[in-house]
Amino acid sequence: MPHPRPFYYLENFNTALGWLRQRYGDLLNETEAGFIERFQGLPLESSALLVRMLGRRGDLFRTDKLRYEEIGCARAAATALIDTGWVDGQPVLTVAELGRVLRKGEVQRVFAADALPRHARKAELLMCIEAVPLAPRRLVEWWPDAPDIVYRVVVKPLCDRLRLLFFGNFHQDWSEFVLTDLGIFKYEQVARDAATRAFQTRQHIDTFHALFECRQQLEEGNDLATVVESLPPPVADNEWLEGRRRKLQFQIAQCYEQQKDLARALAIYRDCQYAGARIRSVRSLERLGEIGSALQLAALVRERPADEVEDQQIGRMWPRLQRKAGVKTARTRRPQDWPTFQLVLPVTERPHHLEGATGEALSTPEAPVHYVENGLLNSLFGLLCWQAIFAPVAGAFFHEFQAAPADLHAPDFRSRRESLFAQCFEQLESDAYRDTICRNFQQKQGIQSPFVFWGVMSEALLSVALNCLPRRHLKACFARILSDIRANRCGLPDLVQFWPEERRYRLIEVKGPGDRLQDNQIRWLTFCVAHDIPVSVCHVSWDMSATQPGSSRLSSSARERV
Image (cartoon, rainbow, N blue to C red; front, top):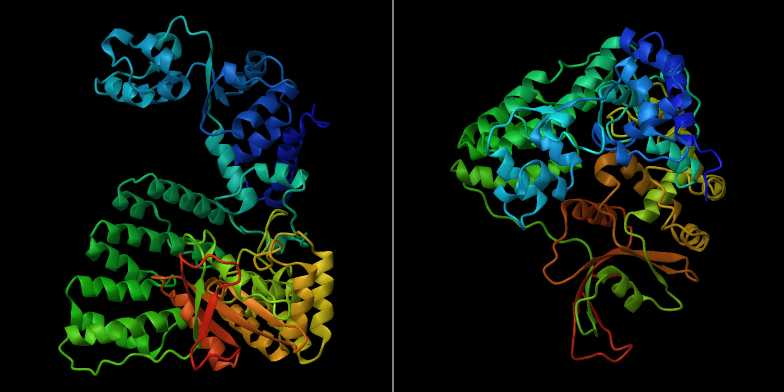
């Protein structure tokens, strides 16, 4: 079926260019502004062909791969693009680049098949060819009888910069328009003005692009010293941008650590203020044998941990460091505070989905069990606090394709919306929170959110959860999620069991043989016990000799509260 708008992708691209000109017109350089202006003057087919190529991987395209009914002849459409200098109609190609555009049989034809392994794969053929130094040349020089033309999109780096400028991140691309058109993704529409721009100065744009190039170098395995030299300096007037710089700095240090270059890793960790850098500094000092310095830094971290994660990690490292420093300490094992119970499943092999099988075994008509993992409490929090999360705070929303505010993981995320979150939490003092959650569940259905798991939440689950989860438990859990969103959005128990008639519930973490509790799961279990939130850990095993339905065996520890 033909598309009702055959040039929909071109319309979307023009919309983005118009948005950039309107929003960042005062910050665009001459090249960027010139491209936007000249693009509008291209013939329809030429502009469409350029957008088609920009939407595909790489910058090299052969004409037999550029067949689009609405565009027609690709060679004719490319003429205007070649005239502008945006497309090279006779690019110089290395052997590796030639290999990307030729098929295996064509490679054998161009490079004399008799001299190559006959049954080798294309990649192996190219390795043999590249073993002999060959100067780059045009396609017609490699293959005079080539039936196609190869184009190189010279303007692709510029268009990538415009894409980064539009989305304000490294992972979204022009397909977002298509996915939204098709209704696959829906986004909350947040009011935006000049104050909400991601970039307020030209320097911000250049810094962001420099970070993108550094990240590309890192992913491509380039020399780390070169990547470090390319890293832009700290950004004093844009916390969101500085956060991205710190994250990349932390990732560079991790790469040094993986290469066993602990001295350079330590130097970067010490200069980095990204979450986890202090712990990695302690660990690097320990591995370097500088136990005294490691213990000294660990004492500072232990005295004033940045968050629960750091407190947990340094607590685990501290006894080991003391022993290495020659300090005698009594070994203590932290008591397990949460209830546990054993469940034996009658199956012939390990269940493919252990949590689901456990839920089915524990579920009864009077006490149904739901597999929710991180989906339930996060969703209830996201629905109650929807207006606060999607508030038009400066520097939080840059474009209409954002599933979350840009500063979601920033230390000041809550403080910048303090009054709005206070209003949300105030509703938990009465039954007002129920109306807000149910209203947002209906009105915001399917809209992307960093907290709401639409695939988990159903009207039935929402209803029973609101009836069985006490306000005080919701308030405690919501406050914890908000206190450290990056760490506390995950690690929640796998299952929830409701007793609707008694208006009570329990959370259940499922572990199979050999499975260990993760750090974030331990933190949530500890939190639940401290706040009298009913929680248990179910240790599951299976009996392959007992396969009769309904023969599951359940045993409880003395501390379990059911």
